[in-house]
Length: 142
Image (tube, rainbow, N blue to C red; front, side):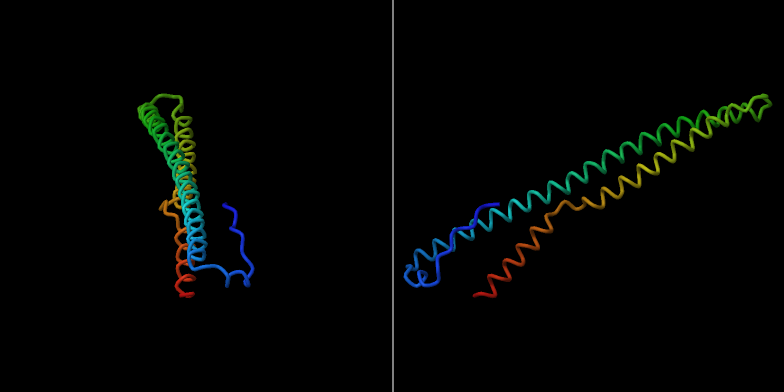
């Protein structure tokens, strides 16, 4: 944050010219605008980070679903083999692995959804609210 400009005592304000007062006000407005821009940048950066994290976890959920589908296909193949009269029940292991992968996918999808909600939309809402308060304050002083 930028340092606040030095304030002059009230009795010296009466001795200052209009040009000096306008210069002082323009400097303060410039500082205020720069700080609002920095706030907006920080806010958007934070939200984009949440969106990126949510996207990565969502991709992980998709990968788990792909693994689950591969296991499901193996499960079905062994099940059909068992139904046709093969003595061993090897397909049960494939079924359990399918359930494990699907559980991982659901957990990852829930984490991704939570991260996406925190980051979307990537608008600088805090900076906008602060700008509205500043505008209302300046309009109230006019």
